Length: 408
Image (cartoon, rainbow, N blue to C red):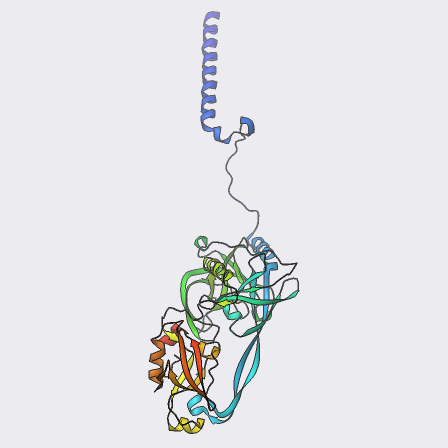
C-alpha cells in the first residue's frame, strides 16, 4: 500500500515539475517583449478601450480654450477711388457726364490666426485686398497691435499678415492633416462674424473637393477648387479664421458660405489645411509680393475694364476727336485699376497697334498670356500718355459670361 502511494506521489511530483517547466518556457517565449526593466516579471493586464474621460462638449470647450488666444480680429483700412458724376453719362459709362474721382477709405474686418513664433498671422487674401493701407490685429486679451500685409496669393485666397515685436504673442495654431479628416467629424469655427469677436460655431465636416464660384477680393466670382465643405456656420467676418478639430488642430481656413444659393443653409466652405500649409511656406519666402494675382486656370489675359467702341456720340460726350476704345468701367483692384486707368479714358493703341472696337480689344487682350506686360497709348482728359500694365488671368466667371460687354 505504501509502495503504491509512494509511486503515485513520485509520478505526480514529476508531472508538476514538467508542467512548471513548460509554463516557464511558454512565458519566456510569449511575454519577453513586455518584460519590465531589468527583465523583471511583466505586469500583464487586459487591454482597455481608449476612453478620454471627456464628453464631446468638454472636448469642444478645451479645443476652443487651446486655440482661442491665437485667433485675432483684423481691422483693415483700404484706400480707393470713387467716381463722382455731375450730369447724364450713363448711356455709355454707367454714370453721369463729367465729374471727378475722389479718394475714399473703406473699413473692413475679418479674422486670422497666429501661425509662427515670429508674428506671422494667416488670413484670407480677400480680407486684406489690394489697396490695404492699415491693418490692426486685435488679440483675445484685448491688445490692439499694428500689423502689416506680408504677402498674398489671391488665387488661393491666402495671405500672411505680420506683427513685429509683440511680446505677448500667443502660440501658433497646430496644423492638422487633410488626409486624416473624415466626413462627419466635428468642425469648430472661431472668428469675428459681424465684428462679434471670439465667436465659436460648431458643425461637422460635410464633404471634400468642392469647386465653388466665390466672390474674390475684387467682388468678382472666381472658381475656387478643392474646398472643404462644413456645416459650421460661417458669416461675414469669419473669413480667415481657423476651422479646427476636437484636439484644436487646424483642418481648414474659413472662406465663405453658400448664401448666394436660394434657401441654402449650413453650407460653408474652408480651404483645406494641407493647401494652407503649402501656401504659407510659399508666402513666407515672398515678402511684399502678391503671388498669382489672377490665377484661375483660364490661361487668358485680363485687364479688368469694360471697353466701349468710340463713336460720334462718345466723342461728343468726351470732347474727343480720335478713334479707339473708351474705358466704360474699371473694376477695383484689377490690373487696369492698378495701372491707373480711369473711366472715360480712351485706349488708342495696344503695343503700338490701333484699338478699333470693343470686340477687337477683348480678343487681343484675351489671346495674351497672364503676366504679359502691355503698352497702352491712352488719351486721358486731353492728355496722351503711355501706360504699361501687367495682365492678370481672366476669372472663370468672366470667361463664362455671354454679355458682349464682358470685362477683358
